Length: 378
Image 1 (cartoon, rainbow, N blue to C red):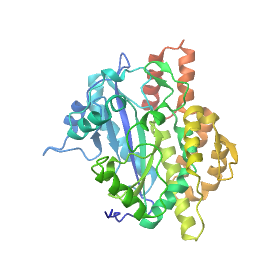
Image 2 (tube, rainbow, N blue to C red; image 1 turned 135 degrees about the vertical axis):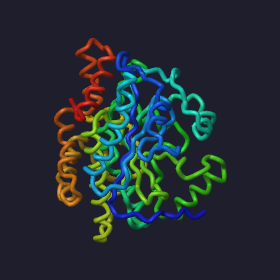
Image 3 (tube, rainbow, N blue to C red; image 1 turned 30 degrees about the vertical axis):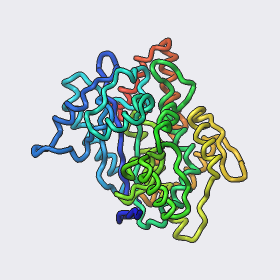
Image 4 (spheres, rainbow, N blue to C red; image 1 turned 90 degrees about the vertical axis):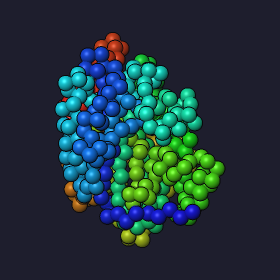
């Protein structure tokens, strides 16, 4: 089968941000997504262009348009959040985001009444019903289909950087899991989820997709749920690595890092350089280490098995990307990564709040809600 790759302007960017709807008083999840979606629906019916439904009724997703800069995407997200708050504030509902809700029970959540979600749950059963998780997805435009798979493999070498920085899901069902990102390992239980295959050619990807459709694993390409994947419909590379972020500043920091990485590797291809690549077994180990240890992870850098503390690797990477950030107009947003290195990732901040409050996780939810309101880490 042929998979056409849409024409896309180079290094355009789009962001998707999944938001939890929580009760202002209890901090528990509220099943009011349909109320929000009905209120923002266009007069003629249909879906709002930037506020979308998700798998669970406790979640809405806000998406940007096709943007040229990270700050432009940030303004799109701010507009959508302001519109949602006009509806949620009178309901005493707050917006919150982390890779997982600290204490909510997956057994109490309701699935959105839509056929594709019902099909997913019917097939995946216990694991599918547990997908009480939130993420940030970033699309970056690729102008040449032949660049997509080499850039995907190159970005995989920076997978643990992104996962460690964004890790925000230490708690699950009221317990500390011991992981920085429980979401990362939860999500990969779904069919076709997890790390991507590192195909050499587009024809290899087409053959894989054909096999998956022929054997009934998927009905369409979008059901390939890799942590980073081509998005042929949009002409982008889609990064689905990051845990949900509790505030806009961090969303834009992650988006800037991803934006710069893709442009950096694209420029290397233009210059005839060979892109970095990691053996699949090392990529897999890096994912586990980043999920388990977060900012304390010792990551594998190359095929030789050289290792480095992830925060040191991030610091070095930021220096390499500074000229790219200047060119793309996202230098201040990329500098937000240094703030995370100084103040700690979300999972660290959440655990600190829990310690200060005798392990009470409603205080953690309150801190996440406060960060969302402030628009920055607190």
